[in-house]
Length: 188
Image (cartoon, rainbow, N blue to C red; front, side, top):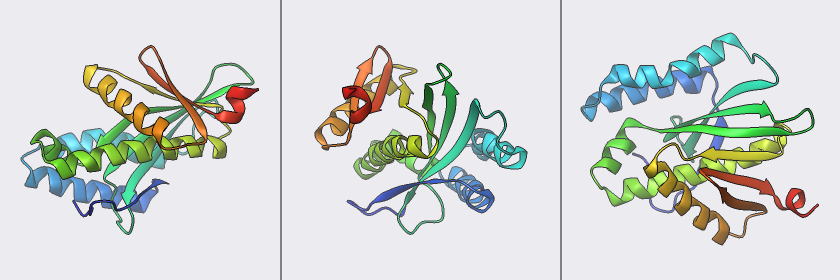
């Protein structure tokens, strides 16, 4: 983990080069942290398929992004986003998953405080980055789903962090979803 406390992270779409570097580094990290390297390959296989198959259906499109520590070639997390249509006029961008690197994940499970801070910062960067990406992808709303109790707890913490940051978007919980809309959308 190359991150220093307080170091910024950035959200960038993955390309073939960053995917290959990620797969290589994460496979090494998995081996070094007693995680199965084949599990890393399974978790990242969709990225390789996405990059080799092109963009697919414009009404339901999967996108691969990484959360990078500034200056790093390999992300601390990989994110799957999906653009879908609720109606003909309303498009949603859904952040389906945030996969932490094997090194960060192993240290979080061990209770390492710096790794936990890295994970929270990676999730926050993923959410903020995905929200910014909605403009690029012409989506109205960003939705995150709390699949289990741990994810719900993380989304609740993330909600409090986002609300206190003075963001230009409205963040609220709707059931098991964390929903983000631009303030201009919520006031009209």
